[in-house]
Amino acid sequence: MHRRELLTTAANPDARHDYLVELHGEPAPGTRLTLRYVPDRAVVTPDGVAAYLGALSDTAAAAGPESLAVAVLDDLNNELIPRWVEVTVERSLPVPQRVVIEDRQPGWDNPHLFARMRRV
Image (cartoon, rainbow, N blue to C red; front, side):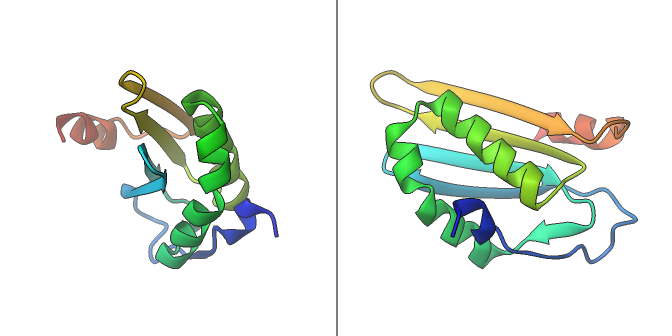
């Protein structure tokens, strides 16, 4: 089974509204991963994210933070198809490093939601 298939989803309880989902995990020791997304038709399940993080451990240990962030973004876009998604990968060794990548569906924007997110 490919790791992205572990990202199980459930129906969005109310696709009429934009709201932010934020998840945190550690796919490998010393590597922190933050997923933030605005769902469209589906949301990821917590069990699916936990299984995905476990399957991601080899990739996280071997890849640089940039490669890991791109791989996670591609997996989320393939399985979840969110309106907007942001992936952050942070490592503290050998030097502190933070990589942030984002994507959104064409034509989607919610400036009020983004303004609130910046204040958090």
